[in-house]
Image 1 (cartoon, one colour):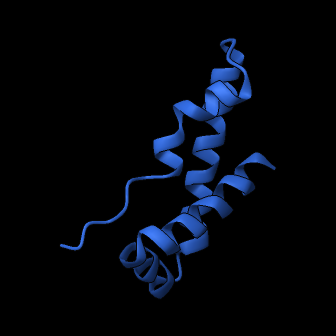
Image 2: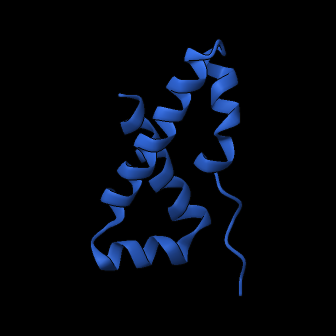
Length: 75
C-alpha cells in the first residue's frame, strides 16, 4: 500500500510542480508506470531504513527529496 500512496503523491506533485514532465509522461502513456516504479523504489528505501532502526517518519524524511523533487525551472 505504501508504494501506491507514494505513486499517487508523485503524480499529484508532478502535475503541480513539474508540468513539463507530467505532460510528457501523459503524452507517452507512461505516467502511471513511471510513478509506480518510483513509488516502489521509495517504499523499498523506507522499509530498508526502518529495518535499520528508523521509525517511519524518520525514514520518510530521508526520501523526501525523491518524493517531492524541487519545482521545474522555467528554462
